[in-house]
Image (tube, rainbow, N blue to C red; front, side, top):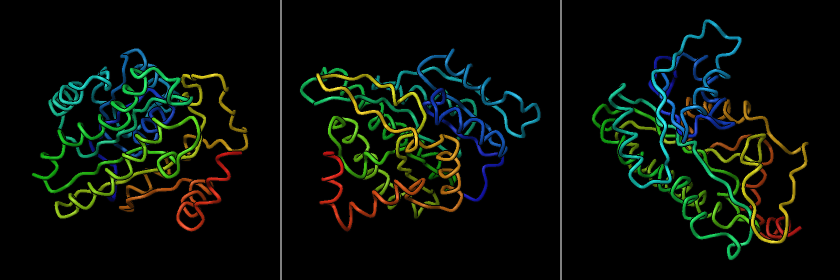
Length: 262
């Protein structure tokens, strides 16, 4: 897509670190936003943060819808409510849960909820929204994946499974919808300064903290995503670390295996 000006955009996980930045940057670019997260109060706080100190933004927020995407029926309800507000031009599947620990230590209900939110909800929402986009022969689907969707690491089995799935879904979906004039973009951020850094942990070994010097700014990651969408890119690697990981997984996977065990 060439411009976000006037585009109606549905953002999931709008109350999180990337979600807030998506609101801020898309409002600056003139988009008409429909926001969703698990709690209305979280959405209100994110919207207030995004517009603070910016009284004359060209975009606007059309609606805020609270929905728990771990529920199998939530995607259908959400898509119906969003379409009742306005026809959607863009879907950004940003909502995500994090977990850390060995698979045997994590309660099954926890990693199953993660799979619902991180993988199945994007698929369900896409399936609900695509028919309208196909009929109009325009639209864009963006999926926020992770470097954990490029290479698995200890303690991230469920999270990696969902993000690997999101990468494959994005690639196959792009091939399916390209003839209909619809774009697909997947982004693979490294660790950023977002609440997912403080996800639930299980098992005896504590998660290794990511050094501050390696953390990315959410504003940079979101800007890279929006630029990639405008340029029609399928894969976006925001920053040197994601690009290096992608290169190593293809040409020297043994090096990545060594690094993840350190």
